[in-house]
Length: 216
Image (cartoon, rainbow, N blue to C red; front, top):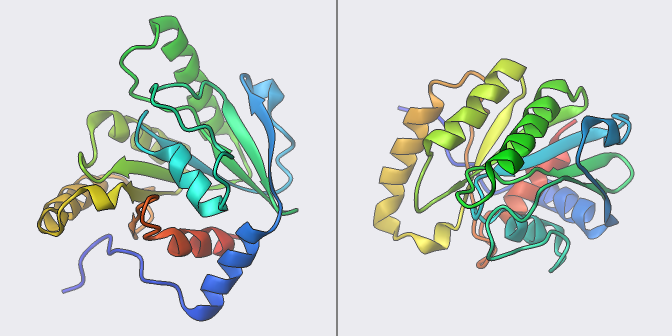
């Protein structure tokens, strides 16, 4: 029996090379946006990365782009307070969304971030896919499901990327996947494939690159 939400397979040689070439090209920070009025024109394919604060989002973006400090990694959760736009070649944007689920940020700041996040996800015509990052050590939490429900309502396809896979034991992987698959079964916008990654070990990076390169 085929499991729902299988792990993405390793890309074939052509797909791997296409993904490598895309990220070996120009990847530059374009701008940080704090209001919808600041968004660039939606004239190219756009993918975004969303995740709880401290899920390893900056590290993953740095890993797939091959740039050590493109996205700001920080030990302080919630440091990214803007929608950060990066140009990916001449035809794509890679978008780093503000982290959510932060515990120490002021309430008014959190509300502002959440409002901007909701406006962006529900109103960006060029957004092809959202990658929702989930920490392999913790699985899907209620705050992740809130974002997933928003993506369902906005009809934005999202794909779960499991981060920090090197931090769990192989014996824990089945339990993690069972939990994630069970949660995703309730979300119609969920893309039916999971990506297992480790920014430190490089696991899943070529797979994620090829997936992004194949989105049209």
